[in-house]
Length: 256
Image 1 (cartoon, rainbow, N blue to C red):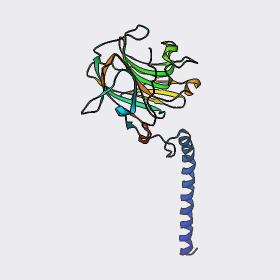
Image 2 (tube, rainbow, N blue to C red):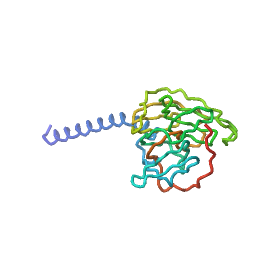
Image 3 (cartoon, helix red, strand yellow):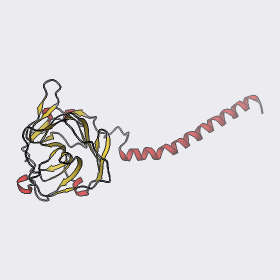
Image 4 (tube, helix red, strand yellow):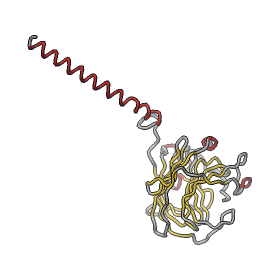
């Protein structure tokens, strides 16, 4: 074989080897890409908006009061009962970075008569009678509780009162810190098609499934506190141009 033909044979063998490696790599990667596409991971189209800082004007307060610090612009709460929701299209997550300052100057019992100090989120909030709560209970017992309030055919607090509550049993859970005045923490809720996850200081603290009926509810999110004085910031992955596109409704407050 002439030198020229030897060089051509070597080049052809190298090209063939490179093609085999490329095909094998494609065979290994393609299934993963399919899985990622199905889960919406790394896919540009339809991806959620990045977290945006929520301002006071982005909230509809339905009970109590939320003030704003003049310098830091952090939210301030000192109402025995505070209820609010994010005035925007449904979102799948919300995060609060807060400083716990202790009890409010005046305390009020829940509708059941229980005296409790707590802060957390309203999730899948269809209305005042059908929604999910993820609450960091501070006193009398420190724990994270996710509960569903379900009252089929009822929408107003005057109809359902404090009925229809039941706690959701988690598949995974962890102990959360005991809060003391001056403590700073982060609380975040994330919802997927079938699962809800609650994080405390970026660590998974609660995870459990959602029923098919609940998944049909609105994805509106909100916040709630009872007898808690605190400062906090909120973020949620919502497109900024969509904010304020709905009027704040006179949503009935939650009895419980």
